[in-house]
Length: 367
Image (cartoon, rainbow, N blue to C red; front, side, top):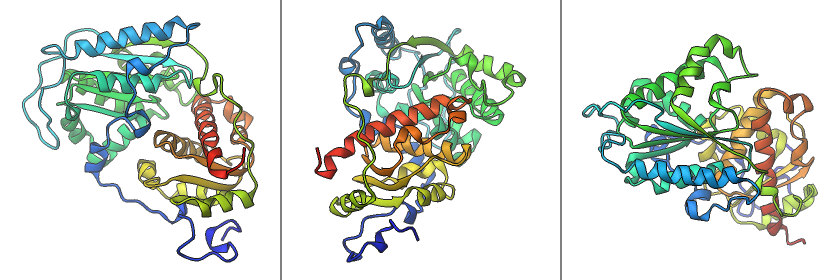
């Protein structure tokens, strides 16, 4: 057991001990995966009116206008979906979609507010929540894994809108799967909206031999009208630098003093993530007030790094502050990783974990 584990703290009692992520093995039924396809808590209250465009980046203002028009169009008769939720059922086939792109694709760097805009689109679209779905690309592929392809098509075909955040293609299997799924949904009249750091025609580049799957990639691209959003990472725009890592002692002390906090060594957490399917990482963080980690160090390999990216996304979505000792989060990934095909995912994780580390400062009682 790690020296930083709760049980090793001198004088600790079972009642006083923090939670441990490594002790959690969540089970997530398929119906929960469907029910949770809504914007995460961090984006409950966002709207187009709460998005603050950078005055030096006109593409941000233009994107808001385009998305407002897109949302308004989805309220028109025949704009998409069958008008009836068909969860786990067949139902009547929807009217074929009109020709041309049935979706918008928000392309831009990390931290320019793409998820804010995507969630605003979901909230603004004039349809009841049961007719709209919102999830990350990983959550969408996990849904297919849980329900099966045909059942996922039937479940989502009755929707007016499907929003896909952090759209990336990490392997050829995902390329064929998502191409087929979105094609079927567009035929059913479902409108699409997605965010990514990569233009639709460039998906998969640097990850696998994307040229071998050019037809599928081009098919995906044809579903979307791309909207470019330029700008710097808002999480660091005019904000103080993230706090440096704390000592093991302070991290442990804070975990014991914070009701609902977890305490784990970073190495133990990485090992545990390998045993939990990424579709369950959201459930892994249920009810947490803070995540406290000791001895943060560089991740050892790409598989581990990609699992950590998913956890960082789920923690960020749920606004769970992260207090850590060891190395700062901008040293998590090797130089080779930050130059590779997944570099945008890693930069997003660094950005989000840094924001959560800043949020955790209020828990320590230090300036």
